[in-house]
Image 1: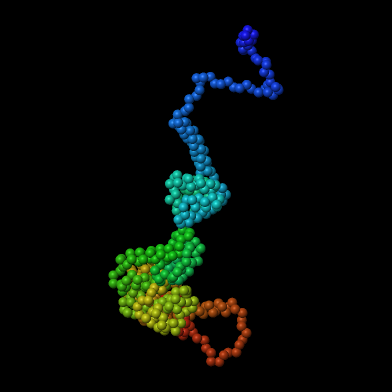
Image 2: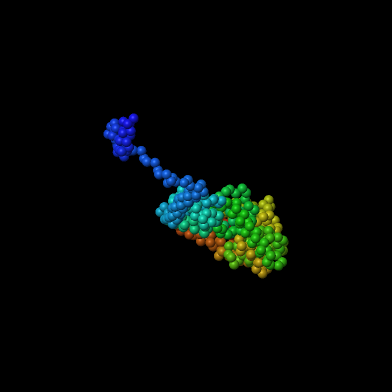
Length: 422
């Protein structure tokens, strides 16, 4: 088969030439790429070890996390030091038992800070989360989160104060507490008379009224107990409660600080001798039940009323309870009185009193006081007559005569109620 051999050689000679017997059927087919050549033998990649692959992935993750953390730190620091959105000073209230989460939310809701999360993160980072104290805080305009956090941690909250004057009854104190809008809670019952120490008390907004009463009672008890230990010898007082009882009377009777010890000495001398105290404020307390002032002079019928247990004109000794809440000075005066033998005193018209050791001297002082009142009454009448238009003449009433002020019963004369006089 010589023909076939020749053909075979011819094909061998042109092995490197393109075989034009196979032509593309269309131009698009001509543009299609030839099949990629197979990779040369011996260059095939070996598969990575599982540990190395894990480490590669771990490093990649850590790098990404580091970048994110750096971005977060930058954001938090920027928010922490950035001026706040508040354009004016304001007051922020931290209620009792509020946590950082609630505080941060309230700060953001009130427009004081931009980002509650930055506040929370900073609180935990600086370990301030358990150091923020309840109270009212003054926040300046454009305060940063750092400024706000520092202000809350310092605990210098805006102070509220309430002043309880000496000589107020427990009922009057309760009414004052109920009228204070910065206190919360109701008062179920009136505290015992004399159990609270009058003073100016600082408190935080939202303080319970009951808690403040307990505080006032605790201060009173401690003060009285300490002073009782250093009391003068020979006092006719059996217990600290007796001292508090008498101090309430001294508080209501004496308006001048330098007279309190003298007034206390008078009442202590009367107790020693078994005399009636004859303290007008006790009658007033029995009539009003401590709910206010009498608003008029004491009547003779009230002086004679034995049904009033607080009537020291008819009942010997101290009244059943204190008639008010005495202050420190009155308690000190009772436990450390002046050395005096006086048993009486009466007002002198200048805010003070005239003291006397005998009834005779006291009666002279009372007469002097009545003359003063009469002159004062006449001066007031003359002044009123000068201002009033002249009345039309009227026929004189037969059998009518003016009654002088000095002829009126004692209880009908508008005297300051400060005068053991019998």
